[in-house]
Image (cartoon, rainbow, N blue to C red; front, top):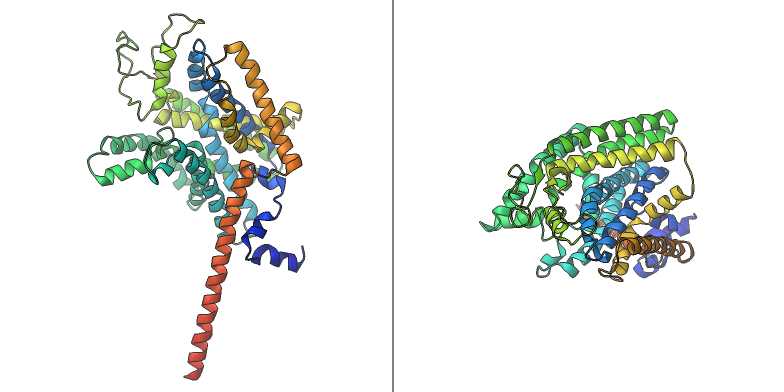
Length: 455
């Protein structure tokens, strides 16, 4: 690129001309996906397909099959937010390490912050539409998009710490985070300080509280650095060593999660599950652990498959935001990455199914947002056999539409395109601010020089 072109790209004061510049399609697909390792996109694609399944089944199943949604969702939550936060942190590692030495640290930081801020802004819109809090409090809430954006920023900050420090912080947050947030929640009416901390940590959206979910950023960045080092090495031996590392720690963490998360929980209402199971805990607050309500929903649903059957309790490791659930989910994230590394990047498997998963992985953020426009098409309408047909057809149509959108319309107007534009506005605005600051500094230096010369 010529010097004049460089000048236009970085010094044009017209923000509208800047936004009209074409964004490469690969940049849109790379909003949350690192380059070169297809295994990461395969895991993302696999996960987003099951996320579509979870949300479609919640709205499309009729009453006789709704119990199946609650049972399957509880077990497949390992493919949900925790996996995406883990992969998002890996993406930050790749973005930073690829650009180190090529760009100033300040530019790298600003790009990570603006990208994370753009995703958080989209999450704020969702919070505003669904929150019962008054504005501007309604903008704050730990939904999945808001947390993905925040996790990118936190992952960048976590990288400033040593690996051992990150590991210790992550484990401490997993162990002590749940009781700390419970304490703030229970004391939220005592004074404004506790109320403020409860609002920040728990937020009006209780599904993904800051504690213990932020621990994923500290732990995943450790594995992200190991992953990047193996990728740069590029040898099959390095990738196989990476596979064994992920597999080993995945098995260990899943084992810890199951080991300490084996006890069952139920709601305290004896009309839902009679008190014939005194050994089952009934002390979890459903306002803080909404996943425990899946048990009562499954038991109260009309079902023809297992008529009269009652689930006695829900394992602690399957209930979101518990200590055991954090270990369990992070462990499964490592296992999914290990399996994908072995199949895709070590054994070099390449077929239509893997290509489809890579495509879905690269557009996973857009799919997650766009699916909400399709969810409302059928409400409580299908038994399982009709649902299966409509689900696969819907997932295929969404993937095909995104392919056409990216290939022939350059992704203009897609969620990724909007986030890139928000990010570019932030970067361009900061460039203009820096230029103004530089001009002011030069003027001050000129004035000081003239005054010193007069003296």
